[in-house]
Image (cartoon, rainbow, N blue to C red; front, side):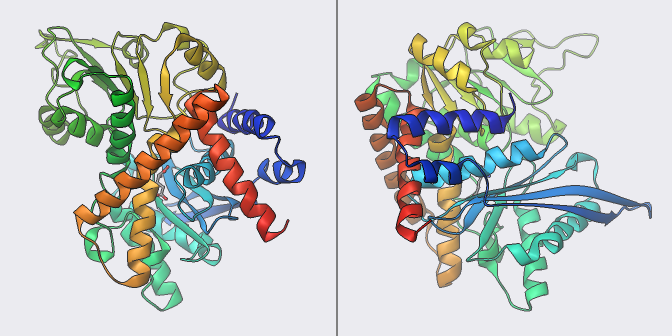
Length: 421
Ligand code: GLU
């Protein structure tokens, strides 16, 4: 099943429990607008390459469309549609006044030069300039898109419009209207909700073993926050490598970060070399890592990693979804039966878009907050949202994802009805 089919299934489950108005359901089954563009880019060698780009504007009943832009070779329309829908659900779950949208470009950004990447980023804005704006649709970073890319995009939009418009995009560097705390917000928000669950389950961080799949922005920051909170990180991975600690010492997030900076990937010992330097750690596949015994499994890579094929084999108590859509609906059923608590993407990674919303508010007011203000506000939103979701899950005897959808879909449905269909 593709991610959009998964998203539809999740919607249907919530709609049935909510006894959702059939007109609202029809509206929510499809995005409001799908945009697709060919983006020509002059390459450094003088040749021209045309990239395929998307922007899906799913629902704006609760506020302007909001969601990141992904640069990845596997981007496709079904994926962008699902991600745009999940953004609408995410914003509604945490109660920020934004709708849902998402963008993507089919590209392997690692093989582009800085100049090519800049031209592609500017080209993306050129293609969709008439459909975005601070009160219309506000993009942000996602997989393989960085603050620098956001700066180019904001600059391009501002140039075309002839006025400085920082509020058109979030996740910008600090000097061009970014918000303090945005860089670590996804992980920080995930940590706040995890902390609530850990307290409910009476786990002690010191005795709690963690495996982290994915070491991009969300995964690496989560590793750092959890390491400093005293959790034991016993395994981690990126797209190239997966490593398990076999001596029970746990990994230090700073060491992994240092290696990543040096090598470009997170392998702390080089076993592809003839003589393996690895004594305390074991290399394995990403799939094997997921199935190792731990207490908390953080999913911070891509979608569809926990499926009906491996859900039964997971040996964890908690799953934290910092990635979007890592667990399929079939897997959710199995995990719930096994008593594994899944902190779903639409709640667990909502810290990113929440601080994006703060950034947008600051841009519109041209008034900037301290990091403490940002995180105090973020913490309050994340804890309140967790508690609302938890209560709904207890009341309806459903998993935390279904509970988030109940909360969010109800809020979106209200907005649709109050505005008038
Ligand atoms: N790409 C992030 C997400 O999936 C952030 C979106 C945003 O900040 O608008 O939630």
